[in-house]
Figure 1: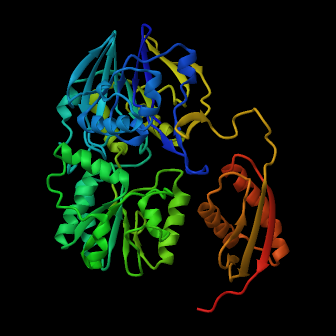
Figure 2: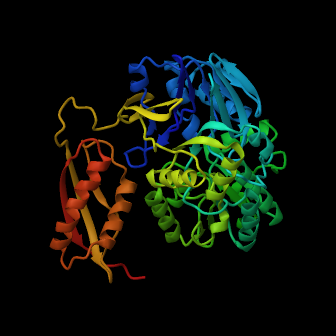
Length: 526
């Protein structure tokens, strides 16, 4: 969630303040950083600096800013997104102050400069943070893109002029990947080729914040004689802010989503949210036949122009299975790798940046432990010290002797429920933690050549058990039935029930008593 606090002589600033979506919990709540540790240490930032406008960098600002009441500095695009969030929360927008890429400013003991770096969203910037005689480069998210489509390419001279840097706090996401990441220009050409092959409707799903990708889809659609429409609130919001700043001057007039039914399928391209399998996003509603203005049918096409974020693989796979059941053709990172380009630096890009800025030490952040370890290996090969791989809650000190771990504070997760920030379900020790309610499940199944399959509608009564995402539960059940090898219904029940207990314990606040009935059914004739 990318909240970093920098302190010098008892003065503190914050960099970024993001959130994540907990797709593993009922109702997919938002998770935000836990402020218990800084509050207990008496740390309140005197300013918040935003590197770019992705939700994992700004998504928690409106939720947590009331505890800080400090000025917020952001580039125009990020500031526009934050102002929309603040308006929704009834917060004062005048605390959000615009900083142009390349601009420097002072805040107490800190001097900062915003240094533009290409990423998959406009105006992403690294921060040069100077306090006392320490010079830290906080890279944020970035890549070296020679053809970014939106915004200027990187200026190497601006970074060579920084050398030497005392410490780089650097993006590790793609450190294990050799070479250079692909360019947005390459993706635009791949989208044009793929779109030209398609017959019927085309839905392209990408991250709403990737304005360059939206522009590339619009250009490809025009080349194929198709008109475009946007689907999803976040998509409409991002495009509105980008247009207001002049980033999408080429975008043709948009077709209102409610008018799509009047156009022939071969004249339609829909750019939709939901590439990560989010249960309430536009693409999921299309796959479930629940969208009020458009229905996907056999012969239509869905292009996933986004890579799966680690942890989202299962909901994405469920989404693709739903699309396949509709006889929709799916293009994704596996059958068309060129349809997406990461926004993060591969190994050669990290090496190039470090040759420019000559850091003495590296603190690898983002990604998982293996990504950080790969990043540390790159540093070691270039004579850069990288003594630590941090985890959430680490208090680090950087002084004349280098980088040290001062203390490690556990970070219990906090989620947003009913517009309030509360502990993660199940972490509250108060009250009865025993089983609650009853779940009655009647499961009609039939044997297949490889396992078992559900026939017809799932019959489920979970009255009094709390929230349960029935679509996710049904999809999970289907996967389990296909994987279980059992000769009889009794053996199937014996194998399935313990797995079901495990799934429900992970996805429900209170585990109910389970009453499972498995019924034989015949496969319908085709």
